[in-house]
Image (cartoon, rainbow, N blue to C red):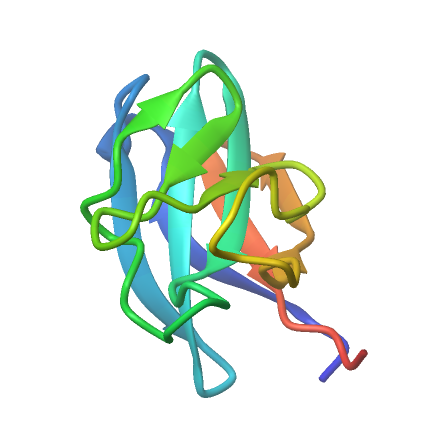
Amino acid sequence: MSDFIKVANVDEIQPGGRLSVVVEDYPVLVIRVGDDFFAIEDACTHDGQPLTNGPVSGREITCPRHGARFDLETGRALCMPATEPVRTFPVEVRDGAVYVKAEED
């Protein structure tokens, strides 16, 4: 589990956009905020529901089901009902493409 995997070309994810992918069996949500890309596990740590359609504000995503918020950069849970962080994945942008790496805890 050491390689970065190409998930998209940069121009496929517009600023404010997102893309759901699977990286090494993990459901991953890739989110673009301006020119920055973030990758988080696409599951709320409160009840396991997908974060796919959750609103993004700044560098935070809100779970559409119960309103838990997470920091896109660190995965930190920012409010109840979530108390555990969401898993984050390293992202690299090179040669016009977005790459994500699944890492062991």
